[in-house]
Image (cartoon, rainbow, N blue to C red; front, side):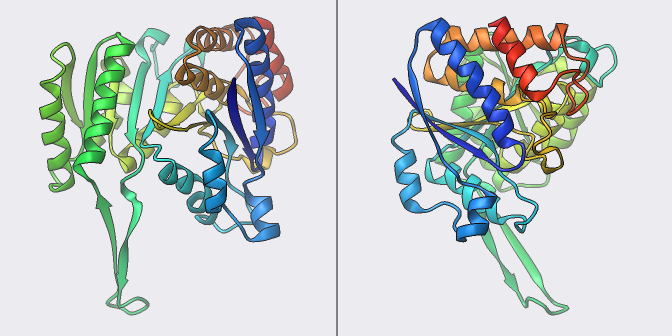
Length: 349
């Protein structure tokens, strides 16, 4: 019996989560596993009415769940940074979800913006360190408000944090068993302290995985190769900031935010799964948003929970819908409503 904490969140989050839960219910019946859900109202509306984001008691309650399924966080009436820091980052840091896992997989060449690229050319995974780096929030102002003001933002990297992230990438490449290559994406020529640590740790761990090929690419070169030769990549490991940037580019390469799912992983604890496209408030309540990223997030959740057969079935159903039914992956352009796309996935399970 899996206990799933559901955070629909803001904007179109509740709409896409509804479809993901529809698919999850069907998968559970077909593949004979049981689960229960509890809805949590964390998000912009709750903050506006109570002034609260996420409290310590909320974190403690969530520790008792098998996984978290998130819709989206982001409200137009709440100043940027409040919800992201008070909910998303607090969840990731408090639950030690130190891996952000982002599959980049093309399901239909028609939706790829790159010329002549086929599904076999776009099939890689970004393993992003999710708890350190610039997102740690460390820094200070000096002489704030004056002409001599200095803003200092610290990229905080520990050997422990870097090592466990890189090791996860090597293990994932071995389990994935495709090209069996791990690429370190960084900026060793400029960010000489942090990336000296990353490179040394990467090189040391590589010796423990003789079956895995390794290489290195600067982050700017990585963005170039994503566009020119995405087929070069298998598993990419990088820090928090660079991972945040390149995964959005990866989402566009695979067809857009409507299909892009991600997992915030604690291999020994509670992981959280979400579509990466955000709350898209302009589409709220119109039943036009693409729910497939949320459906894919539920599929990732099943895989991490060990329900690999069900997870593959969900992905296969999504592939059929993307290949045979949808006119576009964009909101309002799919040829179907949000709920109808969810129904199509269910029918193909």
